[in-house]
Length: 116
Image 1 (cartoon, rainbow, N blue to C red):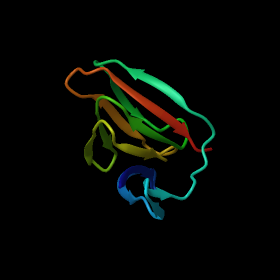
Image 2: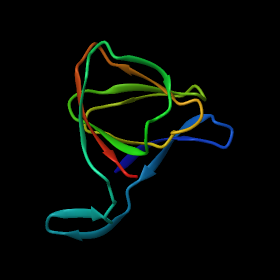
Image 3: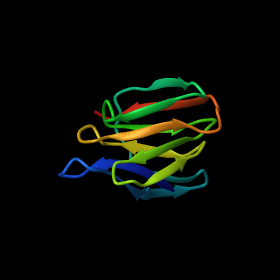
């Protein structure tokens, strides 16, 4: 299982990297990771005309897209479409940030899971 990770380097440039979830247990119900601590849960509805210019993340948090994707561009120029069911970890709370845009005019529901 892959998590998209947005982070800022020491020069304030934002980048993507992939994090592979490490499985620590396996049983009849499948595989599980170690416990990851979180501080809450925020439900979000984003309109289909969402086009949010450069901004840093407001906090370190996981975002889980539920029913639509989002296009994210980081300051090094890479763009990714993060689809429904995918997870990303935003950690670019400083620096140039990222650009977020709705895909194909679709309303998107997502979960924000703060980790600090």
